[in-house]
Image (tube, rainbow over all chains, first blue to last red; front, side, top):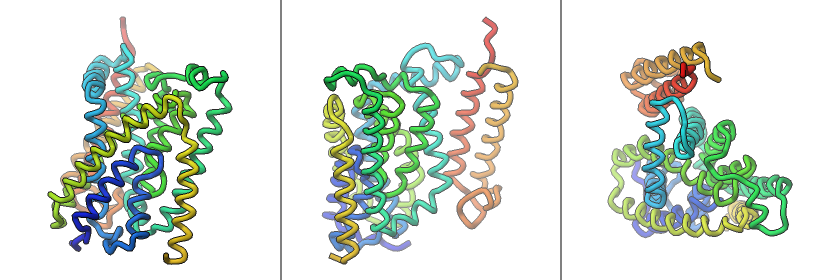
Length: 290
Length: 68
């Protein structure tokens, strides 16, 4: 298998970029495909070991989420087994466990079935930049739909009328989960589409973010289980990449703490405008070879 | 939706997914059902089939009518 020419410094940069951008609704994958090209770095995104390298960075992010929600995950896993064996949900934790299972399955099915077609998109930074613009439009669209359903004058009043993550319907959880599969496309943000989907399904901003982060953990770990062994088989410096994954996890932890506080009153709009601007500027730079 | 028919149907679906998982792991499924061009072991498909089997059995248990 061909050696991926990522230097240690580049790996650290990619780790920081991935961790910082993964949970923000701006597509970490899109940035991971576009930024190295704009910086004229020599490694190839089409290399077979590039996806496992990114997945390793994602494992850093997933570990950060696991640490952030460690107490909640204990309760969720216990709730899953209790409800599964009983055949009934008796409290919010058991319901949340089943909602997360419902949301994870569509992403897993679509991810496995569409894997090869999706990987082909990694060779095209222009496609990633175009999808970044689409992602920005989606974010603004989600907020536009949300504003139509809001009542009250202050942000606190507006948010009060919406639900907690445990109250989302199973149909909505499946749709939000299916939306996750869109995020396999570089440029489309996983957290963006799941937070947006949660908003449309009637969740508070903060709760939509929490549901998105919880939903991300099994999906990313699942991808890691199947992709990372390829990295070990490709003969790349795994120890150096692991350091980058740790950096990615630290950045993701800080991002998650920031975002949960931000969504207490903030919206997706600034990220939507950022994605449109960043996508258009990237397309121009790529078009003129700057 | 609670009915014996739905529960049995989901149980059968679960068994089918278990068989699929085993066939994927031992490499018995033809490439028609996978995105790769060759027959052989398909770990991702096997894991997915196992997850779907678990989900089917859980759903079957939820669909089972209660006597109490």
